[in-house]
Image (tube, rainbow, N blue to C red):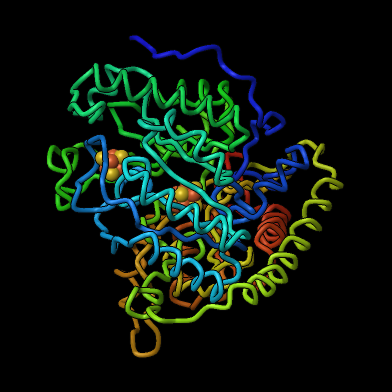
Length: 494
Ligand code: CLF
Ligand code: SF4
């Protein structure tokens, strides 16, 4: 196997970020140097804590792409950074700037504007940088973020630094061109279509070079990788290690989504996606050497709102056309909202820094699920959840490890579900969890959860997630309901 290497690796600038994991631990930023913590504490993707409080938006200004990925169908958005199967309304830079200011005024928690498609932002440099240039001038309180396949990164690293783009994502699926040839059938480079191993070699070389250049310029880099079972799954640990050495801040291993109806090569040839357990196992093994992102929602190229929610329909072009925005006034309000959230996060950070986490674990590590509609609080009815946040909890820490999508269980009054059938999806999604905490849980699902060995609780409604999890864990431990194996005891054995 040949691994592509560029010039000498840089010392990681993001050092101090513990292997415990940005975006993955009890206080995910606790081990970062203060200056770095400040840079990510309001970025919902670069900080797990931030994603409960701050929102992001994407503008779909970049339609073209300069490579082909086998998990992508050009009819849809770039699936390096989005769920395949959804299409965005492509905007001009002017339309994009107007949309960003409109959203920023309406959703003051929106701190980050990302360009992530629907093709590759750097394959559309004029449109991408025209948008960034105007936003840097007209909306300076918004962080600028970009996600790219990296082919043209070395060419544009300086340009990115110029517009104060502080956060960049590079999608890197491999370091080995032989593996790359199974993922990328071709690239378009220097006005030529190049195929196979040769194409993958150029792409990987440019990705690594681009990563080094961004790190040298003080830009925080996240690496996204799509986990493709049987193709690159055994290899991604190596990717994690090398990108960490080269100074990447975070690694986001995302599951391949390959459905025949999306018309992608992988979808049509039956390439399977990883299971949740396989993904978690790989993320855990990469976490030995790198900080892992585990709260990615594979958003679309025109996503608006908190991660996991999509308010794009409220801000379509026809709805915002002609709307006058007083951005100076909006900035005042936005600052007040941001300051209040950051004050709360700082207090939590201090409390975490002062807490004693040296006690040896007495209880087993278990998985617990939470339904939340945001703000880091258990504030969602079980029946209204379309996803559950999954935490690994033991005596000493509460660690966010992912999320599971479910079909809406309850559509409101008059939509009384055939509980047995409708709940099966929830039971499958939560089958490895020992507890679920919601703002409220109806009696029907409550009984079925208990029968499935999942302890339900509505007792911690409106508590902070970590507090609720900690208290419920302690309750279960005190009641002898946690087995050393991490399984919940049945009523009989408890
Ligand atoms: Fe967008 Fe990406 Fe910037 Fe975030 S998304 S460009 S880093 S602002 Fe975030 Fe969405 Fe996952 Fe991307 S949850 S798909 S990682
Ligand atoms: Fe599709 Fe994105 Fe890959 Fe381009 S980089 S082929 S848009 S997934």
